[in-house]
Amino acid sequence: MANVDSGCDKPTIDRIHRATAVEQLLPEGVVAFELRGSASPEDLFPSERECVAAAVERRVREFAAGRLCARAGLVALGLGPAPLLTGCDRAPLWPMNISGSISHTENYCVAVVGREAQFAAIGVDVERIAEVSPALWPLTMRGEELSRLLNREESTRQQTAALIYSAKEAFYKCQYSLTSKWLGFEDVLVSVAGDAFEVSVIAPSHPLHYMLSPWVGRFRVQGDFIVTGIAAEHCNTRGIHRAPSAGGEDLPAAPFEPLHRLRG
Image (cartoon, one colour):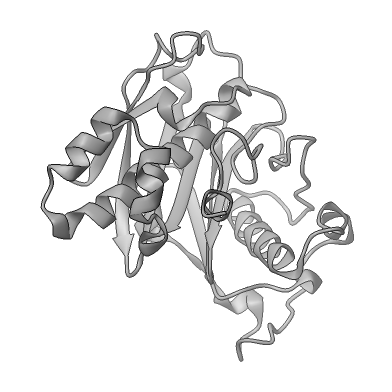
């Protein structure tokens, strides 16, 4: 299944690398792999191709990149290569006793995995900084987040806005693995300090409102995009029942709308 992508001289499998910089955003024990460029449907197992049979070519290539990165991570944990299918909520059906998350943007994909005995849930997200445009800020931030942003130096606002958006996406994937509950952008509050961020659940009806708050994650700027990561270690999530089929990648479109939907 080592197909040669039409846009690169190297076979896809040769362009998948250990993402040590992403691993540093998460607790020890999380494994991350990344792919720069795109992948091909030929890189997928037949059953995986069925999951995206009706999708457009770009989506299929993103899906393939995510599966290849995730598969590399699972192999690093000692599992054999196997299809990684999707559930009815479009989230990856991770193998038993595994937590994971996948994210991709144009020409870049990353997947993180860990053992569920250590990590009840993991969330990772990557965003092109320029794509979180000022028109999106009021749609994706609470009033206090927007006020803090506008009080920053103008030269730092774009990157900070992308960080807030990405942090919410990473947290959404992480919490959805635990709860299968939707959250809106207004339901969480993000604060930034140094290379870390805190996420507080504001929605009083959400099961995590009174637990593990604030959640702490870390971020890294890599060229023109930003990567965020957050994890719920198993020892800190007692009393929360992990959703059996959830795990971050293509979760339900609402209420955390993907950027291409928000841009219209």
